[in-house]
Length: 326
Image (tube, rainbow, N blue to C red; front, side, top):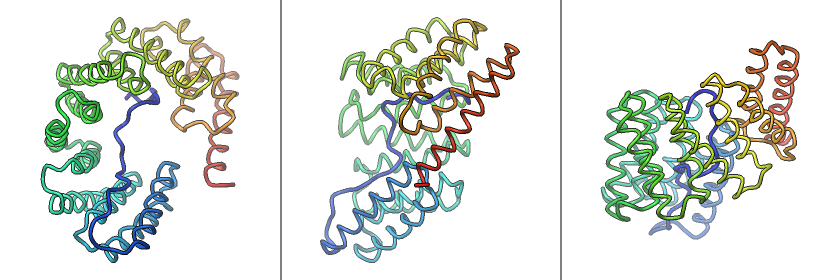
């Protein structure tokens, strides 16, 4: 996504493996403690509390190694989770070490074509994507796709996250035709499985629209943005932050086109949703306010922009205080 756009609620390939069936080794109490600790890691990660999450994840790795053994699949799960948190913290050398360890453990305990390997491959690919090691990422994602396709078939919704991510790899390399084909395939799979208005379509449809905006193909992008907006309005209601995200992205398309007069009412509606929200708004959705402030500045409305930026700062502070419990 571009620096300004916002992820619309929908299907996102899970970044963390939360649990697998417990196998031989470990007591029931060990299993219960490990499961509770793993759930705690996930909750902290989702809240952006990475320092606490890494401490809990390190403890989960040590518990898994002690209770189940260093070659157990639960140890692989904990290693993957710890790696994902290290990556979020920018500790990429440690993240790579634990991603590779998780992958090697799963390959040894489950076999090289087991479905549980696919998320591991994707997560390691996410690390390498951030490092612009695109050929490595492509290889990992293609292997993940082969695993999922062999288990579920070539038209299964489980493929969509991997297909979309592979499209991002091609797009980053300027191979836009290959990227477009993959983005369209992801959308088509979900539409065939669930119909055109299912909530799982919101993110892939929005992503394809944003791709077209980047290519300046606004005619192709507009109906897709409208579809994404319709989906989230129907699924979550007109006051949901996902609606603000969809409105923001459509507004940014009009900004790219030089049609600020059409962008402004969309920004205004999105900002109003954010201001009326009774719960903390996701951090990325707060970018809506920054985007509208930028438009106001270009219109010479500096004071209005400053008021909006101050409100955004206040909401970010409120979000942090609420997230950390004061």
